[in-house]
Image (cartoon, rainbow, N blue to C red):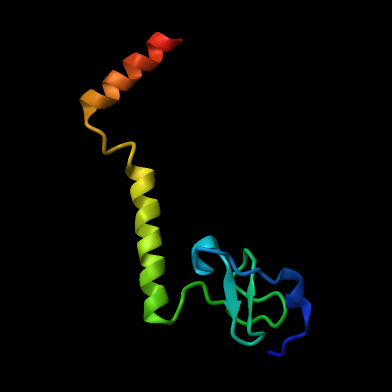
Length: 95
């Protein structure tokens, strides 16, 4: 398991304002590089890619961003039924 230099084609740029793992980047420990890659194994050396941070500070940040994303996706379902019905009626009146 040696870096062959193939990984530089898949090198990921550092995001601004968010974490690397939260946007789907993965890290190879052998090549010591963050990749934008869909698989679980490094395309260069074949080593297993890390998909979660090791540092507790960054673990907490990832957990918080995942909870926010989950809350945003469930926000539609958490409306009281009366409000949802009123919105539906108002939308029908427009069209």
